[in-house]
Image 1 (tube, protein in one colour):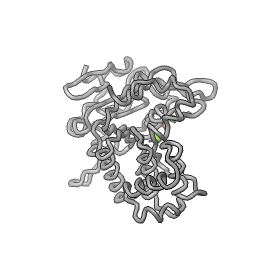
Image 2 (cartoon, rainbow, N blue to C red):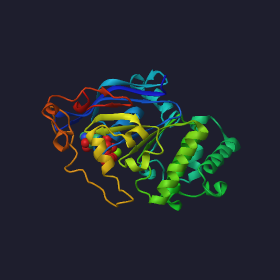
Image 3 (cartoon, protein in one colour):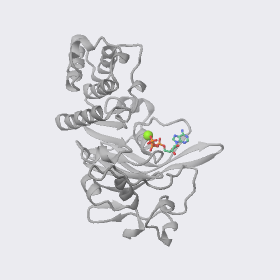
Amino acid sequence: MSILEIKNLNLAFHSNGRDYQALHDINLKLEKGEMLAIVGESGCGKTITAMSVLRLLASNAKILSGEIFYKGQNLLSLTEKQMQNIRGREISLVPQDPMISLNPLYTIGSQLLEVIEIHQNLKGSEAKKRAVEALEQVKIPNAKERLNSYPHEFSGGMRQRVIIAMAIACKSEIIIADEPTTALDVTVQAQIMELIKEIQKSEGTSFIFISHDFGLVYEASDKTAVMYGGHVVENADSYEIFKNPKHPYTQALIKALPDFNTRQLEAIEGYPPSIKDYFSGCPFEPRCPKKMDICKNGFPPVCKTENSFVWCYLYK
Ligand SMILES: Nc1ncnc2c1ncn2[C@@H]1O[C@H](COP(=O)(O)OP(=O)(O)OP(=O)(O)O)[C@@H](O)[C@H]1O
Ligand SMILES: [Mg+2]
């Protein structure tokens, strides 16, 4: 059994008196200890997919149908109280901006101790010991002294480490990292990626890593789901996707990566769709270099190729 399985998730937002569908039949699986990358351009639905798992959606969001199984129980059928026991404890979030999760008025130590006391039922010196261990695990120097620092005394990369430390201290089974390195410079980005890989190995934590940058995640992740216009359009082992992309959108994403030899990159022409755009067929059709007449006839059915799942008429 997968540790997490999203099944046929459909989600809409209510705005100006009507519903706009933002996620269409999302199916994803995360295995224990695995890292699943979700990639795609801005607005394709990466964050709302993740937030559906944590049930932290905006008030105008409506899950139309679907199930999200965590260790076999459907998170969408839990009460808010039951969800509070899952969030932060079993499934943690590392957001793009760590200041969303950190309170600027309290020290790192008091915030770390709070989550440890709530989620791990430890008190006093035992809780403090766990806090120091967690900071050491994410390689914060002088961990004991740094407990007394405030978030603003930490750099962006260090703050992200603190958030990861909170998840480790609570022994979270799944960490969802939503573009956790986008605001960081390239060197720090690489250090955080390395740290995440280490934790995945040493703790057996499962990760969902969201990024618009396929170049950042393809080596670190085990599987990749490529999203476009609220759909998953390709899903396979990351190496396979990188070496042998099937969907024309995935091919375009890979061509858009900078090539260190030629220093060339090919931008994808046009813009990704908004949830207010209506498509009778594949949402990538207007930008697709390989489009055919059939592509306007409904969203393509899933095609199982040798090593991947792809939603494209080319493989039908
Ligand atoms: N509360 C909301 N009301 C209406 N539309 C929304 C709301 N939240 C998100 N959306 C829309 O849903 C779509 C998916 O948003 P989402 O935040 O998941 O994109 P994303 O893939 O994470 O993009 P980015 O890379 O920019 O973070 C977007 O078109 C967005 O405008
Ligand atoms: Mg996002």
